[in-house]
Amino acid sequence: MTDVLSAPLVVEFPFTRSLGPVQSAFLTGLRERTVLGVRADDGTVLVPPVEYDPVTAGELRELVEVATTGTVTTWAWNPSPRRDEPLGTPFAWVLVRLDGAATALLHALDAPGPDAVHTGMRVRIRWAATRTGAITDIACFEPYDGESGPAEPAPHDGEFADPVTGIVTPARLDYVHSPGRAQSAYLKALAGHRTVGERCPACRKVYVPPRGACPTCGIATAEQVEVGPRGTVTTFCIVNIKAKNLDIEVPYVYAHIALDGADLALHGRIAGIPYDQVRMGLRVEPVWAEGAAHPDHYRPTGEPDADYDTYKELV
Image (cartoon, rainbow, N blue to C red; front, side):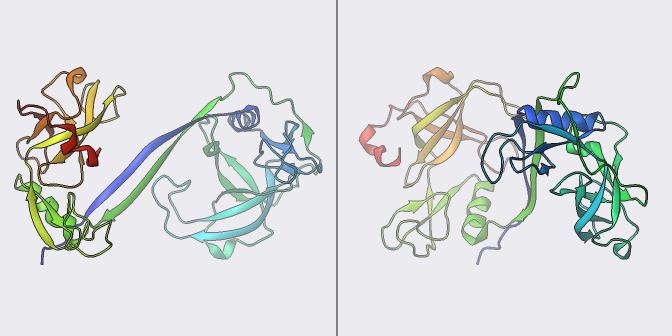
C-alpha cells in the first residue's frame, strides 16, 4: 500500500467590506475612546450596534453613547492563547453588558486566573495605546471596582472627523492535510513527472486527480492508469487581477485540461502562447520547472487542434 502523505496547509485571504453609517460610527468611536450603541424600536440599546432591529427588522439609526464600564454576563477561561488573539497570556473570554446597554459585547478579560473571574463581576475597558478604528481598539477588559457608568445613555450624532468607512479582516485556517491513499499516489507520481489516475471498475472512467472512489458510481477505485502527458484545453479563463505572493504577470490563462486517457479535466496555467491565442481544443503538454513536484504550466504542442466532439463531454 502507498504511504499516505500529510503536510501542514494554510488557507488565508483578506476579507474586505465597506461600512454603513452605524458600523462606521461605532468603529470610529472606538478610535476616539467612545462606545456607541443604537436604540432599538422597543427603546433598548444594542451594543455592538446593528443596522436593523433584530425583532421588527426596522432600520435603526438613533445612536447613543454608553459607558466604558460594565458587568460580565458569562465567561470562559482560555488557558492557551493562539496567534493574534487579544492577549498573549491566559485570559477569559467574556460577554460584557456595558452600563446603559441591553446586550453584551464579546471581548477578552485580563485576569490572573479563572478563580478571579465570575459572572456579575464589574469590569472596564482598557484601551489600546494605538487605535485605528477596529474592535481591537479595545485592548481588553480589566477588573473594576469603581462607580458604575450612567444607566441612561447620552444621545450622539455619530459624527467624527475622518470616519472609518471600511475594514479588512484577515481570515486564516491552519490545518494538517492528509490527501489519502489515492491522492498520495498521484502526488508521488507527479514528483516523478508522471500523471496517474484511477479507473472505476464499473463505468471504466479514469479520474485525474484520483479520489479513491468513483463520483458517479460511488464505488471504490484502485486500478492505477497513467495518462497524458499531453492533453486538450476544454475551456479557459483569462486572469487580469494579480494574486498576492504569486509571481506571475497578468494577464495569463488558466484552463481546464483533459489529459489524454483521462475522463476528467484538471486545472493548469497555459503559457508559451499569447493569452489571446489560447482556445478550446488547443493541444498542450506540461512544462516542469527544475526540482518541481508538479507542472509549472502547459504549453502548445504544435499539433492540430482537437475536434470538439473528442472533448465536449469534459467542457
